[in-house]
Image (cartoon, rainbow over all chains, first blue to last red; front, side, top):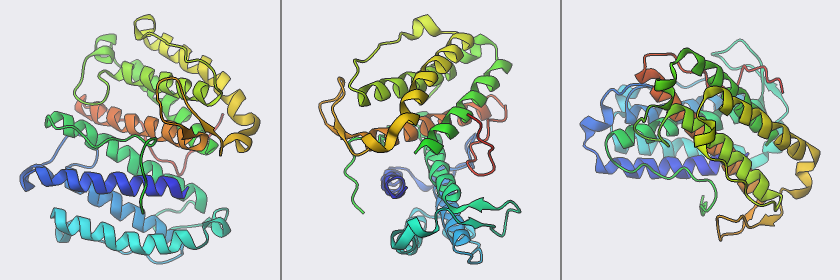
Length: 154
Length: 154
């Protein structure tokens, strides 16, 4: 499970770097599909990951408002800030809670914690696939999504 | 690991069903990003999964040519055919080979078998994300990518 988180974090960082070649207008421009703009997609991935990870821990949800993070620098900082906290939690003892059931504040349905971890993983990869189409529509090569052949450094 | 394969297979089947609402011209139409058309994307996912799974087993690669599968019915049949074989292999004893190293015919680099399984999983989710953008560009609701809340039947 952790390998997928590490993969996602690395790919996300590469997309955040990739974004530097675009003017801010392109980053926040409304696009068809997904959740809208390139920058909002990255923000959304970060926000959703953090919400579910807090949910797993039975912590209250912290709402973050895109209005306050609508620059590449702020989204990058938010990603780093949340990741520090998420790593601390996941690397401690994931195996001990994976099969436990939890109910999160925004969904009535109880889920197994491992199911939520898989949801977070698939959620990010899915949205990254959307970014890759928008990149080609901008005539720019997207970040590679390959899992094999990556040196994962976390 | 198997949960992700089951998720991908279910989502793939839903996309194959989803495709029935489109005329064949839209299915094979060249689009920007990804590997081209909607139908070719689904074919590509199936082809790549099968190749890597054969690679893990040290079996020679079987080339499948899209020319021979360029209808929704044929792509669906290919998916079902390969899946039967893949399931038989994966469900037998995945745990016994996950940490073994293998070299596949199309890549010089040796990989851990578990790394290849993760590559196959991320590969499909990534391309499905691309389909979701094309669906919205066609003004049609895409298949849900949610992992939580699915009843996975295999």
